[in-house]
Amino acid sequence: MDRLRRLAKQPFVVLPLAAALVLAGWVFLRAGDTTDSDVAAGDQVIEATLASASETLSAEGTIAYAESADLAFTASGTVTAVHVEAGQAVAAGDVLAEIDAPELEADVAAAETDVAEAEARLADDVASGASDAQVAADESSLAIAQDRLADAEEALAGTRLVAPFDGAVSTVDLVAGEELGDGGTSATSLSGSGTGSGQSSSTLGADQTATGAGAGSTASTHIQVVSDGRFVVEVGFGDTEVTNVSVGQTATISLSSSTSGAGPGVFPGGFGGGGFALGGDAATIDRGGDEPASGVIDDVAPATGEVTELSSIADASSGVARYPATVAFTDDSGDYHAGATVLVELTYGDTTEVVQVPVFAVSTDGDESTVTVRTDAGDETRVVTTGDTTGTMITITEGLAAGEQVVVAIPGVGGAGGAGGAGGQRGGFAGGGGAIIANAEEGS
Image (cartoon, rainbow, N blue to C red):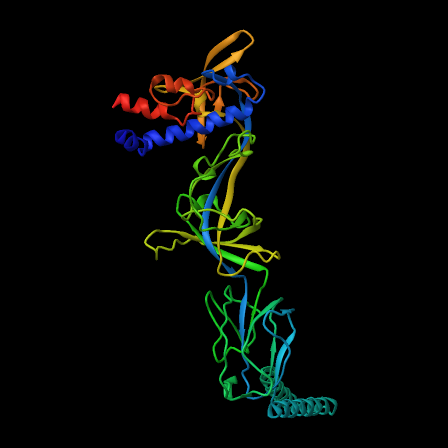
């Protein structure tokens, strides 16, 4: 008995047993209209089916905001108004907060006066027929006055914080009545931390800076704006996978789960056409990428994204050469958020319809594979060419057409046997599969 238990723990015993149990269960479901004696028979006839075959690359990554900006006042003064709070949606150009800086307003007014005087002087000299040298001097004075006005207006613009893009306010570290010193440094203690991350925005002005992943608010960051609902995921692919990735390629993003274990993952391809509970309509061949996720959260709908950036230079900082790629996507469901781990899947190559049969239907002798086809004239052995194996299904590339009936030799699914010995094997797996363990005992 102890020896049987040890054998039951061996992969060469457990895996065939599990596979046979799955197939037997599928046949049982498909044979609902047959008699008990039919179900217990050693041979079952199964129809070759069509499945949609595709190849995918899978990689894990962490969600970041597509854009994130830390906004800060560059002028000193008293905060006169804070128009937003954390979590509030904003549009590009919205004024988020203001400070009172009368000296800057005075500078703008003085610069505007200088420009007006320079324009009038130039106009008078041109009208009076002044020399070319005088007109040139007037034009130079006007240009200098205009530059001073631009500088004064830029400084005054530093008294307002403006949203650089459509998004949402992540943090607000500012209150009305607060006194700001030189460079916008608060004279009082600021609190709060930002979690926004993402790419730089080319639209940011002098009073605001873009942050990278993990950047947070500091005493000089007064309001943080993030691209709520617009995200990016950074992933990497090896040199053999990157040839199948291109900018503009569609990607599927699924929220990852830390849950792992058996279940559908044991036979990921299932039976084509959904004939068995683990089955699906497509045979997907996973070609790797970054370490795949342990699973995805089934009740969260996948999002659709696009590859927006692909580096031609490998990053070997982790010890393995990976080509960085950026996948962008939008989501307004609220299920996806910055910092969450997701599984990114890219499908490549032409999606074609392929013929599939259970692996149990194929016999291989050396380099030759055959299947038994049941026809009106009787059973015939036919040489076939096989392709990829997905779960318990194998692709037939030549020699068999969809709809043809193939004979699958399996143990019966009926009977109360399975207690042990050769007779238990004929009795089926209803008794717990003891036949396979017992046969392993006899062959040891």
